[in-house]
Length: 196
Image (cartoon, rainbow, N blue to C red; front, side):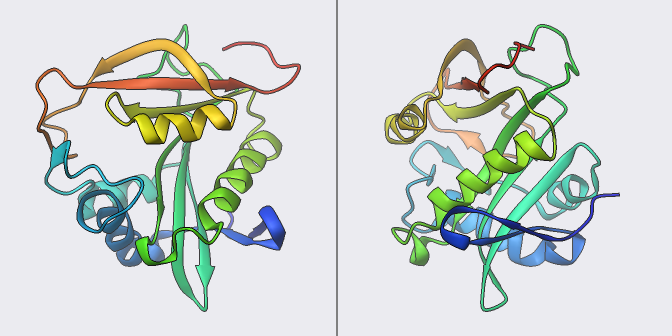
């Protein structure tokens, strides 16, 4: 059972582990940031449809291999990120390889961007992955045309792993607007860690 509690992020930011009671605000925030409002993670020029369905998000929140971290402001969720210890659909050498954590669904409320929330939340997620999940390698997946997002991760010392796979059309994550669009993986090894 995943415990709900607070974790310190950047600049004393309070980061909490989400649970099923956060379903509705998380559903709204993720779809708003990815597919509706102007946002640095917005994909609506690349993908049509919602980013995640309510049913899929409910299943993710209930999964033991997934942890959602959230940042709250006056009891309102203003940022979230998902940590996956399953290492599925990645460039790891074997399915289910341990000591890898994949970040996904990284979203900050569009009206709160530019305030350091995203940077603090991502730093907190990295710390949580290393200290609580014993990660030795951190992974992110981006749409291949997202040069701005890739630049952000490169600044945080993530490098292309050389692993790509087709956009998962038909998996209730929207429909690609660019033919042959790929998901590109970036990775960062924790100092002194071994590869998956």
